[in-house]
Length: 369
Image 1: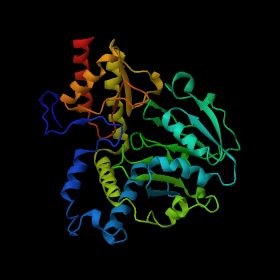
Image 2: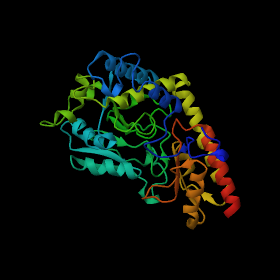
Image 3: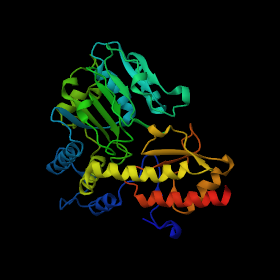
Image 4: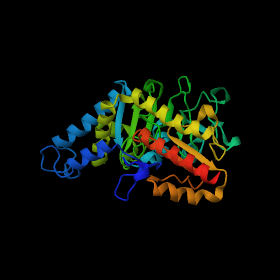
């Protein structure tokens, strides 16, 4: 990575994009080395038959590695699908309603809002808890939830990418399956997969390139799809065909597999969680001691992955972004719905990148504060 003071146009930047996001440089270099000829096959992974022995070994290794990293129990299926998390907003109710008429949803920000809107097409949605009253700046505590024992499932978004709110605990839902959209914090912290019925995650934040979605589903929840549903939307169809009912997003799976190997080489999820705590603490400590920058999220619910912040003088935002870019600190502009700034510091963001950002922000505050 570049030194922030010595940044040049040809250096790699510190990419704070919320997604598609930064990938480990080691992973990119490995993919470059194998681009034209994967391990003596004479082919790029992009050219391989998805049913050939070469790609079969790639997808099987990727599944084995993510199972090891997340300690996924044997009675859960791991699926490599397409369509992003947005398609899962529909696939979850289509597969899990199983004759029931309603599902519980936790309304904690823009991504849960999208999931709720999609689910309403297929069932009645009970908003079991919401943080809308405070502009989605906190995670509703479990004692605020009003769950329906007859709901088909309970859905929540453990990390809201736009608002920078993260649940640092796993909800208790009894016998009702818990469904989680982990797109922006999967692999960033240790979790007990057995507490979930369904986990899904778009790849483009902590897993790999856009185009891949990972689904982890308990086997007893398979085979419940609504009658007449298209085969491509049926989890059981994909499970029965080992994620190859149709041609999968092969290259994205390959790069995800390289990322899983990188995670294992660097201490696994426990080590990554410790680094993520260190990185987020660096930035939050600066924000909390600043009179010029501010983070709006309740302290106990702050995301380790996505850190929004505002400037005391909003008129300086463009200047802030331009100066940051000149120093190799890019994609810090906040989401259009939230405004301000946002630093996304996923697994692949090195601590040096966060230190460089804090150094720049400190100097900017001295100059303009």
